[in-house]
Length: 394
Ligand SMILES: *Cc1c(COP(=O)(O)O)cnc(C)c1O
View (cartoon, rainbow, N blue to C red):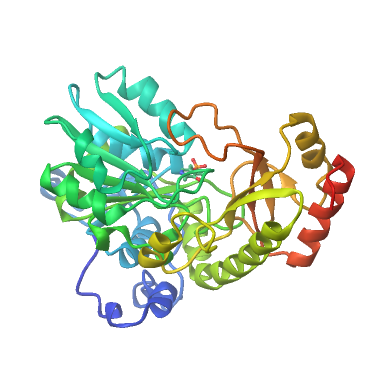
């Protein structure tokens, strides 16, 4: 959907806009929230309207009042010209790549990308005749030396998946502009509340709405927001591919977004407490959390981000995978499972085998922790007892 920039709500501060944008009670008999529209067919009054598709809604895959309400609030947060909703966070990566990569292009993708992004690049873009080069996420302005005449896209993600490198996005955007390349970011970690990529020169911002916007581990959905330059081509590709979002999940995400600001503050606080505690723990080597002063790109994070969220990494001081697995299996409160950003804490033993440059910490075994909304003291006790079971000293 293309957002209406004349909306009077844009004068309010962020928390107010997050709460109110997208709701139009006057259009629904005063009901505060939009209806969940289940739709394929939309009726037209006559042949001429149908021929020209000259009405607001034309078909279920092309948007409904429910999906529009969600797009409106995302546009408001991202400062984008338009947002498309797609069926998953992964589709939010693949749809814009398909919209802007053509046979014969060279594209640059950070080495610490979400690993299914790499699978798509290697298995689909490669087959389309697109050359994909993985770059060091810490390259910054140095990306200049990788640019070629046919470089069409620089794909970024900050912090990087699992290894949490913070990228110098403004420096990368400056190089991209000079070469007329498009910059995309997977902005899932920060959410549009804590990082505003379009303000730093990024063209396309990607979200797994599955994560904090949904926030309850009960849905998958994605969004792609574009500036004026890229909006039309992005929207066209979503329509060509038929990757539309359903009303029920769109509604749940809209509902989640109303409380995302307050949830994030709690995730941020709890995660920082856990990160600081782990940093002091004798069984822990390193903690990879951008908001800790010990993080190598902490200053960059402070310069560009407005906050941190609940996902970070730490290494167990061992090279013995079976010892790490014993620790992992002994976790009780903290769940073993993929995805993150829900209310419940989760841990994953990270696999970095597909990395070519950003190989992560050199010693120890890397664990990714999603800190939920539990009392951090209970999480600490869970980790402590699992370390005892696995035979770590403390
Ligand atoms: C989870 C995730 C995705 C994919 O989201 P799904 O909705 O699970 O497909 C994409 N990017 C990042 C950074 C993620 O963490």
